Length: 352
Image 1 (tube, one colour):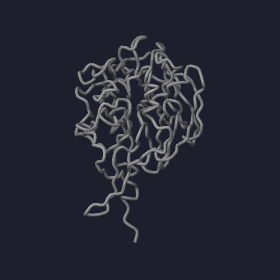
Image 2 (cartoon, one colour):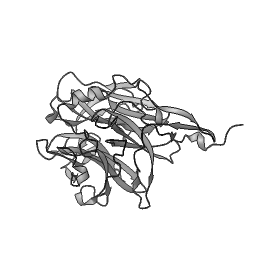
Image 3 (spheres, helix red, strand yellow):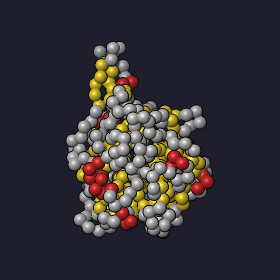
Image 4 (cartoon, rainbow, N blue to C red):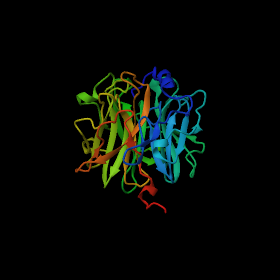
């Protein structure tokens, strides 16, 4: 999701004017039995999908053409984006956070809802991260601007997310520039004192240093997403230019103090990348099926080869390697049937 001035115009084309979108979930018959399946994409147009499960429902947070923050609610994972959604925040007509809302993330912290979103005044050089505060009980209730979240350097920043460690210490992780010019996007981390405040200096934990991270200029590491399992902490991030077919996912594994760059061990190969008919898969979030036993990755990809920021939203199940790291496999081709995410009732005996 490399960002520059033209993205506002492109994202208006790439994202839907309304969310009466095509959802390709279908019921398919097999010779053996009536098998419930669905196919990708699950949202016909969209980017930077953020999905979480809370209180019996899935919530999908997005920015509508960079102009509003929307939250959608679905009973089943493959149904995200099929409802009209609720516009939970509309920016003011002018000012530092009035334009180009990118990659919002919805988080439930300390019993309240927060949205982290990048925004600017119409000038990409002024992109910074902002925090919206919502209602305690309803992620579709209106949100209010809490303020900018920035480290002391206050450099260009997008794609902020939150890492909560055992014991409750939180860290903010985001993509930013080292200086004041658009040369390269790195991943940075800083400690948080509360849900809307960074409490110290930033530390760079990843920069584009492998060939597969260097497709397109400027160079890009962005879209960090935290993934945890059995005490292990991972950050899955997007690498190479998001306007290229080679946009892909890389993996950092935490081994030590989160505030030390050496603690973040980078896998030397991408963990999710293009295939013969899937292009630019990246910027993901993670959730589980309702039975809590299936792990799912939700991501965007180009709608066709060379389509750049014209993208759709997809999802698929993933597994785990023997060393405890995630195994995402390869992105499945559009139209390939997949079993629906497990429902709680799937594990129950049939009623007679």
